[in-house]
Length: 111
Image 1 (tube, one colour):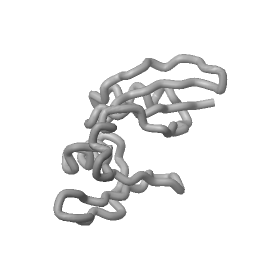
Image 2 (spheres, one colour):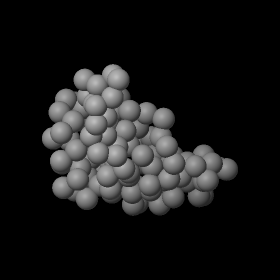
Image 3 (tube, one colour):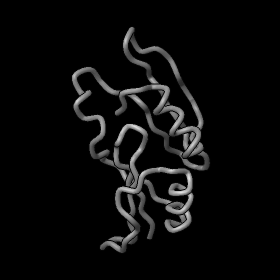
Image 4 (cartoon, one colour):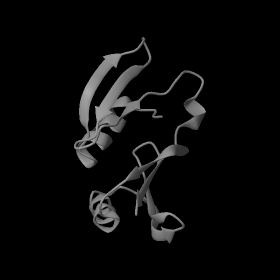
């Protein structure tokens, strides 16, 4: 979820190195932006459905597994991605969180 299409797109492409798959007008107010994650079979869509604007800046119900959580945490911190939670050990491995340009929490995990 995002409020500013260009700001969100810049965050994900410049700071996280995601690649644009689709960037088209959805209607007069919205854009549909699909991004691919280099080296992964998954991707994400940057889209906020009408009447869901109040959810921008909240918890995103996903977790991205990374190979080296300490290095990823350091890389994101160096790119000035706001730290939500520093790396800590959890029941299923290691966990940390940053926020994106819109305040949404990005959860990272590693085994």
